[in-house]
Amino acid sequence: METDTAAWERYAEGRTPRRAVNSAGATTWLNWTQYPDHGPDESLLGPLHGRRVLELGCGTGCNLAHLATLGAECIGVDIAPGQRWKAEERWGHVPGLTFHTAEATEFLTSSPDSFDAVLSIFGPVWFTDPQQLLPLVRKRLAPGGVLAFSHKPPGDDSEPVGPLREARAVSRWDYSAGEWADLLARTGFTNVTAEIIPPPGSESPGTLLVRAETAERGGAGLVRRKARPA
Image (cartoon, rainbow, N blue to C red; front, side, top):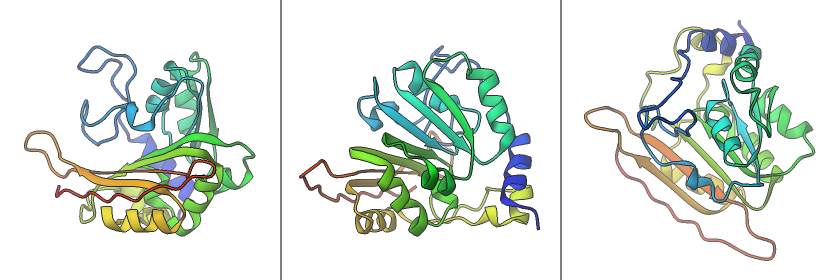
């Protein structure tokens, strides 16, 4: 059976590079959904200037590069070796931006660093056992830090395709908004919001977007659950 790394590497080879400029004329931008120029922006992560940000499953680094241009100190991690080369070729000139090749849980286990925000856009949070991943993320987040991630809602089986179906990498944790909210709360996260962002126009499906925080030192948070149909 093909390894996870090899499967993701072959999958990445078939992906179309992101456009150089979006519909607003910007050369960098953050896209939480599977549709271009759609959905919320980076404000979901809170203040960014001077903050440390980790993206799990950063791919070619386009989302993370945008955060670096806003003054964040950014680290990107991806399991596919070729993605690091592509990311560095396109974004290596951006200050405060570094990329690593590693599996998400291995990086979180070995890294001594803490982060103010961790994001995963159709990335490892969707493809890694959350019982293993979420405690590692929480351990690496600073007090008041933010975890935000997105993936397709449960029931959509259009991706991944091709080589990923031949490897364990195809495993997905297709939890609903409410299930993610409960799991995050049990893992010790606070101020949890989970909702389905409606698709643009007549497109389908929507995008499940989840945000949670670690408690401030000496503080406690609330758990809020929101879910809208796709």
